[in-house]
Length: 374
Picture 1 (cartoon, one colour):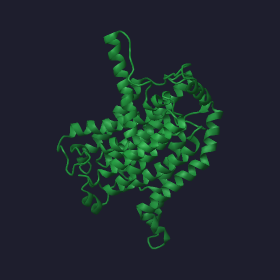
Picture 2 (cartoon, rainbow, N blue to C red; picture 1 turned 90 degrees about the vertical axis):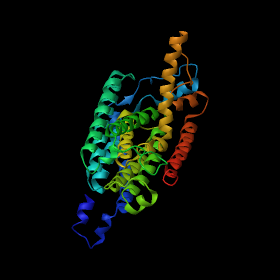
Picture 3 (cartoon, rainbow, N blue to C red; picture 1 turned 120 degrees about the horizontal axis):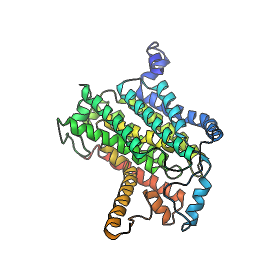
Picture 4 (cartoon, helix red, strand yellow; picture 1 turned 30 degrees about the vertical axis):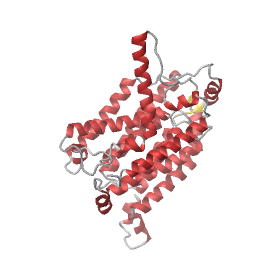
């Protein structure tokens, strides 16, 4: 909106709105201030509607771990569905500061669909007061349809076909595979679906998913800006994708939103984002990685999310295998996702979250180093 207004006043102070860097800074500050402004009202509204987590999570630690059980009890009654605040702030900020193009619209479409899916899942949990929610089949089906539609749309347009027809991986200058649209669409779908679910699995401690998303968001902000700059993309030998600089504004808005939400979500949390927020944030990161032709860089940048998801897959697979072979299921970790394993080892929740932040920053540095190590 502000960009369009600047076109009517090209030789006035309004012209600064034509610069992506200025609009990105404005988007970050706007999202942060809106989060602070709207946060208390949204939390009060959610509390009034009884949108609270009064049920026991699926991974019950039980009486054998008194401190963890006490922590679970302390969190009961905390408002959930805070993802609605994230969605509202992101939408308003992007509307104000971004110039709408196909990249921005695809990203915001993903945000909308996954927010609705997460809201439905949270609604069922609250209605039934248990952790079952929507069926896994429904959630994965919606994610698959969304991801495949986006991949097919990118392939249909000549200007974006290369995003799915060629496979680009970190630390390599040139695509490792060229002219493989089917594989590219599947990779794009896997990136979006995997990122959405990985962030969802990470959302199990106060501020953990929010802070880690913030860290990955900084990486994506840098990558989206570089991808649309012809000279910098050529110098760094990364794919040049026109229009992705507007995703830099979206990333800045995401960073500001996460900072603002973390204000209320840090320990002890005043509100949880729920699946309403975690599925949407993860999907947003995934679609942006696809749109800059760097889906596998997200695996590096989001190493914490990957570790959380892998820990769950290993735990479930090993448990089923040992139950078939020995008649009794065994565990690789004391508890999955991974953050609960460390909590079982006696780490305080705040220590787990802080150390995961540190590891997340290290993964972010590795992802950014892939720009020069080729």
